[in-house]
Length: 191
Image (cartoon, helix red, strand yellow):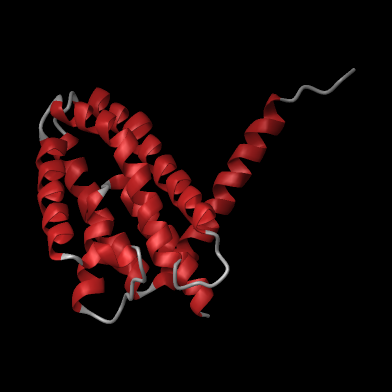
């Protein structure tokens, strides 16, 4: 059971990093430092340092305000294209270190791919659609919803990781089905 909950937790934290790079790292850092809910081994225990926690608070505040300012939010998303996948890789690897036998490179790659996919969906699809439909007026509200979602998913991933599995598995199945359907729709029968 610990292996499964560790994997679900890692998936949730890295997906959350795709929305906001610093929130899941801050959640892991604070819970690792002040509770027994997360126990980080070396080198990930560096996240519990007071300096790192302070830096994550400052970076979270910067991203929070940059994400809400018109035009600045697009520049922020461009910069975060590199930061969010890296944060997802760190969150995934740090949270799976309790699972024996997972290669750190595989954990980092999985976190990078998950956070990168969520970020691309957010910055490349959702945000431009919201901006074009609302003329940018809904970006602040959408940004707040994304921040609340990042906090919620991060906390759920640590406190009740099986919810991530209950939500993630059907969502993954839906995405696979949609991709399979799209691929089969484009295939023309040979006559």
